[in-house]
Length: 88
Image 1 (tube, rainbow, N blue to C red):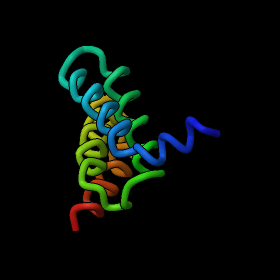
Image 2: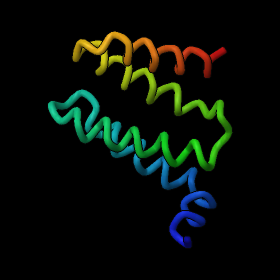
Image 3: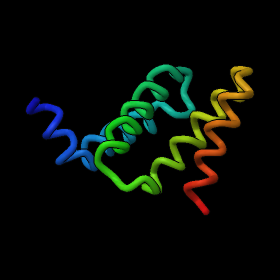
């Protein structure tokens, strides 16, 4: 559909918008909004950007930190591993 095509074509900018929104909630009490926007950015960037896009590692670090603080050790390790692979 057209929305999907536009998202893929302009994914860098749509993903960046969600990244910025997620970043605006980072460090606040509204973790759910932060995580939702970061996950949306990941979903968009996976369709439109190279697999090693640097901003993905930043998102995975934050999501890993949140998972760790919330007691989800396996989720945290998964996110931290993804972040580390992107930095190699």
